[in-house]
Image 1 (cartoon, rainbow, N blue to C red):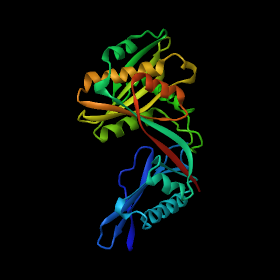
Image 2: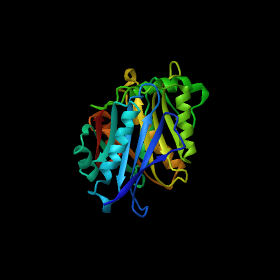
Image 3: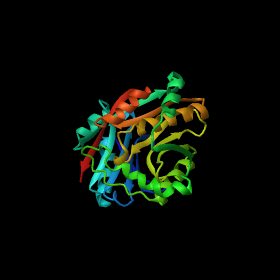
Image 4: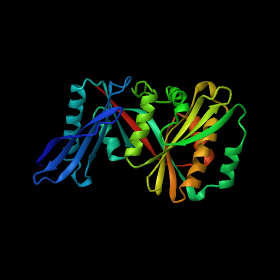
Amino acid sequence: MSFDITPLADPRPAPSSRRLAWLAAGDEGVPLGSAFLRLFTQEGQEHLAELQLAVHGAERRRGVGTRLLEAAVDAAGAERRRSVIAQAVEGSPADRFLAARGFRKVLALTYARLPLADVDRAAIDALVELPHPGYRLTEWDGIVPDALARSFAGSRRAMDDMPMEGTDFGRVVWDVERVVAAAEAVARRGELLHTVAAVDATDGGVVGFCELVVPGDGSGDGRHYGTAVLPEHRGRGLARWMKAAAVRHVLERHPELAGLRTDTAASNTPMLAVNDSLGYVPTHKAVEYQLDL
């Protein structure tokens, strides 16, 4: 089989990364597959690249994926990256492809979905109204309010000890500029970002957050971007409190939304328990792979 691999240019770098891309096409220019390599650019992750590779089902086992992978890995090396990560649904062709080409499994993920039509609204209201002495909830749409910006950026360290198992993910360094840029990126895509935060009543600082992204038209499924609590404030039920408030928000503001999706490391038993208590139903498992360069 004859085909060409063509490098493509991505003209829109993100605030924390840029992308390289390749297209595999047959003799008549028919697309056969593609590869995207995300090169992280922020402090703490300059060593990392993330691969997304897809080959049309009818064109598999003909060397297309292998050639695309070679192009992406060569580029990652030229960019002085030490690790390339890629994700695959457990048991899928991509799972077998990566395992056969030197990638190693470093993280197991559980994906789950909350069907909003099945939610017990009274139970959600009761969870949100449950007192949490010393704390209060606050919420906002889009960019964090100026009064909370610094403590919200500081609360992002709650993700530093998120179970990543063997992944060479690095340490993401957050400041106010990066928090604002992330919210602006969601808005540019035409999506809606809603954040619920737990605030320490003694000093007004953010100690935990739950981020939710909803399609701009309010239909389909929303996605949890992150839920975390600072280590010194854990064990008080704040994660479930915030996540319940996020569910109530979409029930009130987005009645056409069908569900909420989330993914959690299989080793993160506390968050899995939170999801289960709120009615999230596992949909599938995925594997994070890593290639060490």
